[in-house]
Image (tube, rainbow, N blue to C red; front, side):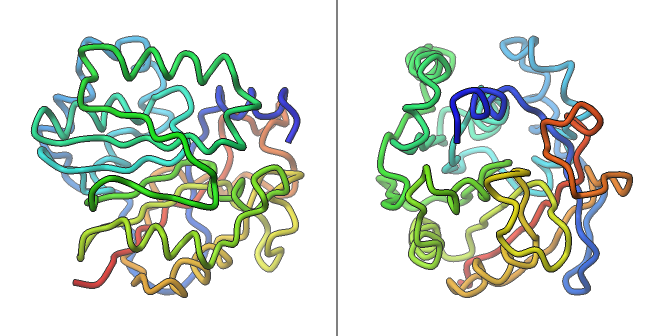
Length: 258
């Protein structure tokens, strides 16, 4: 992936959609816990707030079941948009581990430098940075949630290895506590397209994600339609002006059995 493309990815904020797949129930709306609302209203993230409605921050955090005192592993934190809310929700008794794959950081020196500053900011003392090869995911402790937004498809691409996804998803499984969750958000590719669009349109067939993750031992635990956009044709790149910021994305939740 070229540096200009990745830079755009790091700046991109896109709504999420759920493809039409019969299975677990859809969770398009649910009560927002008070601690989620408080975290979203943290004055330290005032600059992020203009994106909250479009990116459905409250719905995503509620669906991901993040709780005070929890431990979160976030893959490729980008600008820190999600991280700042994770940090405020889990609080001083919790922790947020953020993973920057070596292969991705080399294309985003400026963003990575900004991230290094974030994790040394006192307000985010419960956030730490894990820089490691994409194919060798590890975390110091078992976590309650592994979260990835708009980058699961990247792990399939040549610039990331590509990663052996069977092994990678098993590493995610091993990083979680029993009963822990793996939440995946990504741009929808046409049904049946498999992995054909991951490095071109930056999209992935949701059926592939579900098949890969379930093969690692996870149980599909639901999907959210909080950010779906049925007007997205699924056949254009996510950076196209006609769809950028409004792509159809899926949110899948997988649970590690207890």
